[in-house]
Image 1 (cartoon, rainbow, N blue to C red):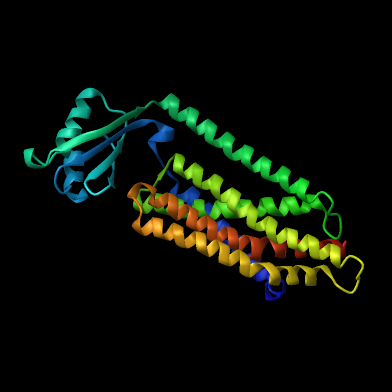
Image 2 (spheres, rainbow, N blue to C red; image 1 turned 60 degrees about the vertical axis):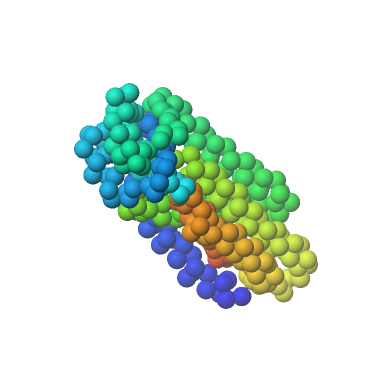
Length: 300
């Protein structure tokens, strides 16, 4: 199959995308939300049409309460994220949001998250990602425990982990761009997106690896068939299914991006990127890496 034949090209594309994503994360950074750094979340709704963000931003800026993020919600509401506010600042913000008596902003929700709570959420988020990653590695090691030739089981696991890193780093790099240019916030939804990407990506990789394993068993006595051919035929048998399955999910996520609420738009974008690159890595990264590892072993 052409994927195996031109494996160095596809591996180079992945390497470049990962490098650019890492540069994006370090250069632009992330706009950390109040879930992790602490702050106040105010939600208001208007009786009539809500004012434009461009009209509210200068008024809020005059309050000198620091950086404020305005997010439309529903048809007539806004979610306002800011640093922690005292009672006086809270009242001034509500007054600034009101468009007069004819279009008063009615507060529907107000939450204040302290720095200690944010630090605790950060710790739990990191632990969750680490535990899920370890669970995936253990599962792959167990599932491929009987594989020994021509590539051992632990190498399948290692390659799957490389693919997982690829699938998380690239969407994270894209999110850093969204954070810098559009104000997307790194919050608990970002962590949920990362965990979801890990699960969806590894499932696709395991399906293709399992096909390679089964074909390797069938060809075990036939020394005429080399590993490269087995991987190529395995991809022929499974890549259409993988792409079709991923496309159905991506279409649903794109519908959520364009027609869903503003609060979940970046979450859906992150998942869409994760699904796309997860499918790409299963076909164009993980499988060619198996062939490259096997060829490297032959040369030793």
